[in-house]
Image (cartoon, rainbow, N blue to C red; front, side, top):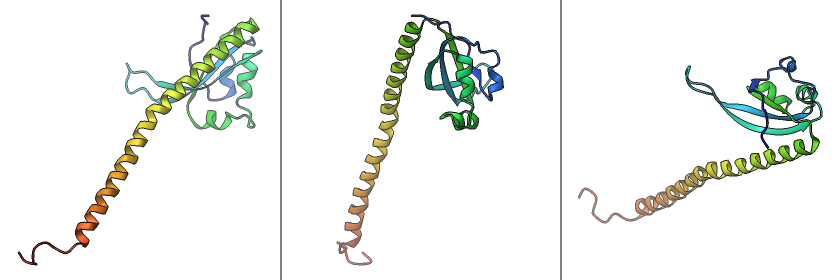
Length: 149
């Protein structure tokens, strides 16, 4: 199913949501991870939430309530929102589920990418420890040649 998504727009407060329709649909929240470096470059966003609502405008406005699980993140970091109006509840639910599955698969893939450097650092630390023990053995051993040789 193809969805007609809005453009990404910055959400600094609930006032920025005045043009979001009071219609059923799906929305995505993303955090800016790379700012544009120049006039021809683009920002990079990382999607962290995909959800659906009977009234997208109200659901997005609720994100800015102090008790919302996303309140701190939305007020602390540059976040962006995009939405798609989907009137049919079955299609909306199917699309939301497919997008959530995609997001989870991307998180798993990213975890593997970021896990590799951690494993490499652990291997380097282990190699350093082995090298340090070898140096300690050599330094603690009796010299092979007499002093001053």
